[in-house]
Length: 305
Image (cartoon, rainbow, N blue to C red; front, side, top):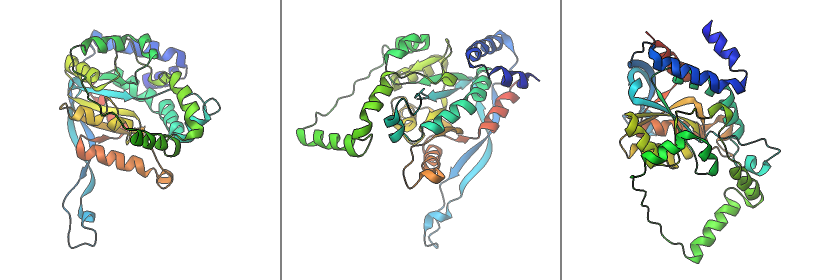
């Protein structure tokens, strides 16, 4: 009955933040929780190549599933680049080049509410990774992360481009992505950037705009395992500041939730979302595990003794 109540309550988006804060405070009052639980996790067996086959890699074990321990006290769900991108009529050029926006919107509407209210009603942490901008000043969690990371080095030397390479970059911008006809809308969209309402940070949740701030949040809260949700699994979640590659280099395990991510697709991959499949495979072999949303949520709920 309580789950039915939550589902009905969440239909009223303006009350969602109120409910999340109330659930968070109830947990802190002392609901009995188990810290270490088992959750079914997908992993990819990247061995053994069979050289008797025409394609030796076809001998690999492939995707497998195992019940593996996870320490809720040491784990955080990271919601990364979950934006309110407006509607296509507002920014047609943005939608023209970022074709996954409708899929991301669907995930925000249908996956994030259930995922985040379950996580917030547990001992798991929730962090957010965003892009630097004035909108972040409205969120206390960003100010907290900035202060925590004050002493973290961000030194990154850059090579100055010559006129030839600058022309090459300009060519890419015009003819690879986002395209001459789309630049204006993409720029306008980013000027009005904000979190999707379903992914809006609560007051106590840390917000990082770079790897140093996310690392500082992890260190301050004792987190060593990050489970990513957001967009896109083969793009920003991998290589943007605060993404998986950044954090693996800092010693954190980084996993993902299959139904809570989408990917950058191209003409040849979009129909079957092959970009997403390769992105999840890459996460599995370099950094962590892939969780199914129902398994993940059921596992968290089982932590309530």
